[in-house]
Image (cartoon, rainbow, N blue to C red; front, side):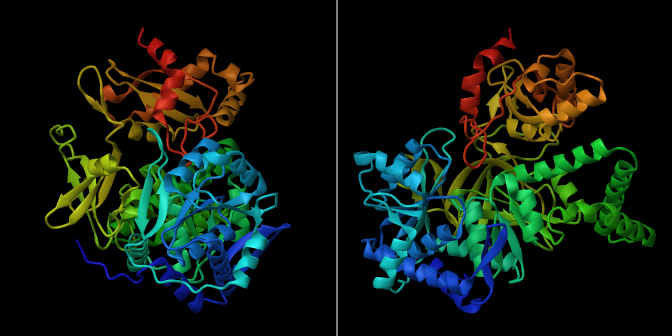
Length: 605
């Protein structure tokens, strides 16, 4: 495990150094009345100073908890850094979470003050009344209401009583980040200033960004990936962030903000992959031929580069086709995009290679909230598409084989990944049994965290994720199945919007499939079929045959017993609204299974 030399001791130091070093540079951009307006580092620093005084005036002290319920916006970050400056802990939540989840988290962490995005959320918290045992104040960013403190009033309190920032110890808790709760109530992950500041320091050592770099921020800062890698990471390097208006406006905002960096989960990259291929298939003719030629030439150039070879003809052809085809695709993302960073879940190798061929260098990493979050990453000079990279400085990743099936002859050795290092959380809040289940001790590496992820390492130390230990199940014949790699491959089909594979203690695998309505409509048009609604389309025999063929195609490369032999079609997509996806868009298998259990059971009759 290579030692790390932390650039930052805590997030207060990180904030102050950045505000001082990059004072006149733009930090946050927001779209106001059709125009993008940018807040400088200097002005952001003044807002944080005012908010810190406001929190102190309302009784927030070292060790207290301040919660926030909001999407990404400058006030979110103001609340975070002002909280850190008091030695208190920041507890983020999502606007679209259920009220019951807000109440659970607020009571579990004992928050004394909540910063809410708007007066509606504030009123819903007020309606909980005595259920919120520790809550004393509700500050709202937008609007006002009886018993609520407006954002202007909050900052005015700070103007009246300025308060200098403290210097937190590296072991002081900077934040409670609650896990998504795929199997029960969310758990409060305690992350110290040292955890987060060391993770940011590791980014500086492997992938320093420039002050001229810019991202379009749409990953929620309430999640560790968006918060640490984008918010803390870019702020520490003097870069800027345009904040997307909404998920629906990402493509339009990319063209306006013209970012050089894109931080995203695989779902967004999958949509880019799917969208480009759908557009080319729909265009047909010369456009599709040029696209296919551009892809083939880019692949040839990549192979030559990897072998240390070159071809003047290939280079010339690639430059021409890149200008004719790929540059127009990149233009949809603003035309300046250089690097894309994927995390939060495993990225399909096919998708990663395609994004790379477009001329956008992609770097995939791996980690969890409990590892602050980065444990491994690809970076310049150390990159293998399909892997999640090598361990960052100060971190060691081991493969534990005690909970997994012995590999068959010729197969890679896979096991549960265990992470050791400065990034390992301080623990789950008030959950001793859960802590005992995940922490391990090592004579050389110290305390480690059992990730619950299955993976392997190659001879160069690159890590490959293959699934989740808890997702792993046995078929009736005793063969182990890890469903997530299958699902990821199936979702590359333009006709499959979502899928869950199932087969625990059953003779074979089956699936719940959500078809892609747009692709089915195009297929119907091309085949002279009356499209109708998605609900009516999934009743057609030829549509079932189409989906069956896509599942067969997607099974290529998997063992025969892993393939899905039957499936249920549904027009109802998995979403956060129906509870089948977590706020970070992970599949809640138990909820999907509960909803479709009868139909799945019927497939075995």
